[in-house]
Length: 463
Image (cartoon, rainbow, N blue to C red; front, side):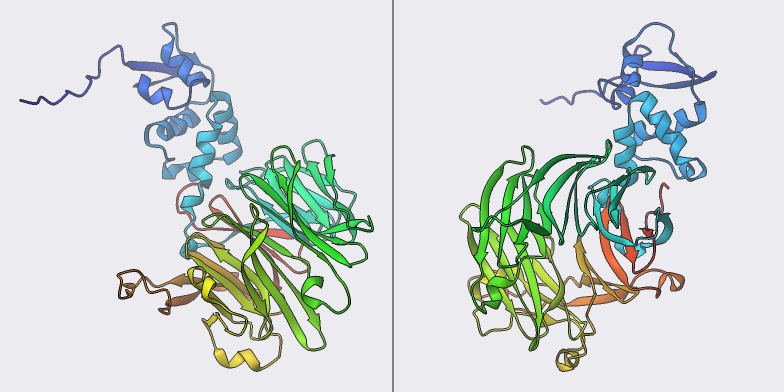
């Protein structure tokens, strides 16, 4: 016969009473140890002496609820976030508070709406936005970079050596990689002290200086697209993200004559974690229109695994979604959103068109460049595309997948995506959107000629 192990009894030795600011709170040792071994609350759980803390009991009540349930109560909206952060730091549980308020899984794409703005100093509009997973934010405007912590409290504004920062990547809440298309070198910046920690350079055969066209990263590597100052060569360098030592070089092109494909440097770099590939895309505008290429690199072998050459309705912007197993673009001529299934890229040849239009196919050949300046980014299971001052939200309609004769999923079956317009009526319109970025449970938006960052939120809980 098998006996069930009884649940541990709530004995008086397990119950802890803490006096906070003259008000008694009763909880258990197990609850207090959720704060972590180095926290004040864990120390209070083990002490047998008088447990008195000279702090505000109201804020302690909120933090105790966080330890008990892993989430803050709805009444937290009535309190000042900065005071709550200060209290969490005192008790040593700021990381738990951060996770509760800014967890990326809490981003509700369908409920996003503009909630506030962050003003920037000076007259320059934002040129690039970089975020960390839990919502720290770096914004370049002119030659300056302004940083905000996860609670969106301004931390610092530093003046860089660049005339204007064109590419920006958040390495940590206090460190960023920055580059410009008219100034040599990739700089690793200490944003807390306002100093340059290291400058990374690439030289071609003539040893001329090189400018930065794009920056990307994985959890392990830092990717940088360089172009020589004479624009006669380009390359993608791969660095170790921790040591910043060079690991390998991919896509090195020395340009001779009218080789347009080689002359196009990568202006967007994205890591495709599901397949362990780097997406590098770039385009060129000429007399015959806009052409471009999208390459997926295996950094271990240094080879291109997939390549898409763009001539008809070339991308204005492009993104790849791990969750949706697809690549998305917005056409520079049509302004429409297209997708291609990532799993079918291996069957694409030079003459085939892998793109499926999610909008009006008739706009593809009108030649009006309606997609100029449009931005497209993926987050979770959704794709966000800016059209002028508005944002479209594209989501896949879940349907039963077709099967091939051997029982595997039929990758040729057309998938169904639906469009929604984001925000309230008062959020729509306005100046052209120049950046879309995601950090924590928020979306960040910048607009042409506006010296602010818009904060879009959708969570009903918290701040």
